[in-house]
Image (cartoon, rainbow, N blue to C red):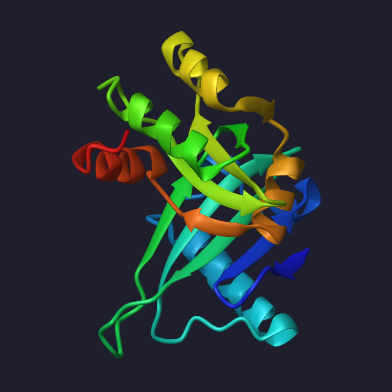
Length: 195
């Protein structure tokens, strides 16, 4: 399934049968692998023909998520100020998602500031605005630590680890921070002495 979310994001879902036809396993999906690169190029060509999604002169981030024996691939265009930039790709593989909802931006910012001040290892994260709520999506091999969970639960609440729910948020929401949201936003407001 190929789904153009908007002008900068494309979602491609590969079923188990698709992975078999490509003779590819999720753990083999690496940009350093020439077979993976060729598959991605073929998929992008199909997407261009079907949806008009075009990557000309743009950097792109590629995120690959496991899904029921197959995988979901999210392509996000990253615009450069410089013209005629060579294509640069980066594949990020995620294992599990943990989705937290915040009713206001103030609650979200306060939570991010406190999490940042934990000075612990910060997990990869994104922020999406969807249905008038802010969603913090954490990616990690393990569940959030107890201190992290306590802070998140103080300002928001855990909603799901369901990947399909996550894709609905991506598809219909607006991306506020595309990567490293905890670090980027927490660091910003910490330096501004937000209170």
